[in-house]
Structures are given as structure tokens and as C-alpha cells.
Image (cartoon, rainbow, N blue to C red; front, side, top):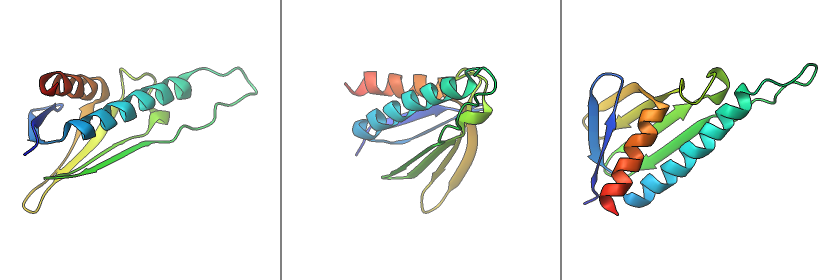
Length: 115
């Protein structure tokens, strides 16, 4: 059984089994997303237009199915960004928002606990 990851949401939290390897993969994906948000929000001088950045579409399948989505092109900074989180298993489905920076902190805390 994998250790429990606790995600703090805008209202409340959710915990589920999550592997340390998957947490490391998600941590890397979040770091890349933050860089893409910074690139998307960088003010290019006219007439040069910044190219759209690809969204984060993270998926994990284990004891639960976890999907995290974020479009970096709509947020002014990584600190303002929110992600859409879907967690489901055979009996329940939860879809909600979380702050990107809070998600990053939750993953870091989880990795500290399991290391």
C-alpha cells in the first residue's frame, strides 16, 4: 500500500494512496508548468507575440485515478494559477480546484514524509 497524499483544496482536503515515484513525476510536471506560466505571462514587445504554452495534463492511475489540468496561458503568474483536479475510483468521483502553489507545497511535504 502506498503512503497517503493529502491535497489541500480551496475548501477542505482529500487524501488518497499515492506512490513516491508518482509524486516525483508530478513535482517535475508542476515545476515545468510554473515555467510555462512565467513564459506565457512574460510581456513580449510588439509586434512579437509570445507563443501559447501547452497545458499541464497529468494523469495517474493507482488505487485511484488522478487527473490534474492547468492552462498556463490564462494565469498572470504561477502564484495566481489554479488547477482542476479530478480524483475517482469505482465508487466516487471528485472534481474541484486547487491553488497551484498549494499543490506544489502538498507534494513537497509528502515527499519529505516518505523520504
